[in-house]
Length: 157
Image 1 (spheres, rainbow, N blue to C red):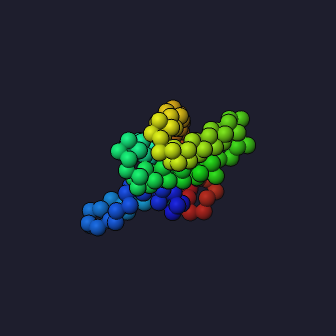
Image 2 (image 1 turned 30 degrees about the horizontal axis):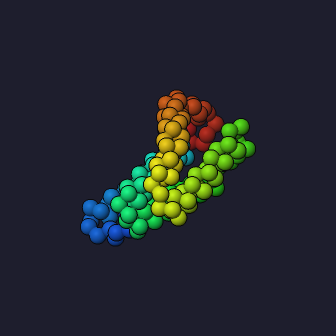
Image 3 (image 1 turned 90 degrees about the horizontal axis):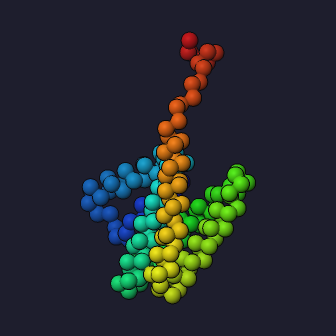
């Protein structure tokens, strides 16, 4: 979980210096640590989209350090998504794993070639996937809570 917090909070390589920045960093860590699995997945996809946008901008500006940092974080997120995917949980699992593998290959190529076209193509692949995960998470959050009978629980009833 701490590794996920680091991936999501990896805004910049700059040190957190002010009290407000430290509080914001703590808030982000707490948000990750307390997020549901569905919300965490949405947070990862949001961060992946942000990293891809930043990487393409850095490639356009020929800012190799920013490109390396953003593509590296994007690759780490995709690796985390691949590693946490249970391909047997649903029939689309193997296809999603193949898509993540394709993204990994393309992100490596984008970094080697410093090619914003490849990075933007990856962003176009991620965008509908991100929206699908967001919709799924929202539908899960909208489901009514399941009532748990309290009879027989010690100290209740």
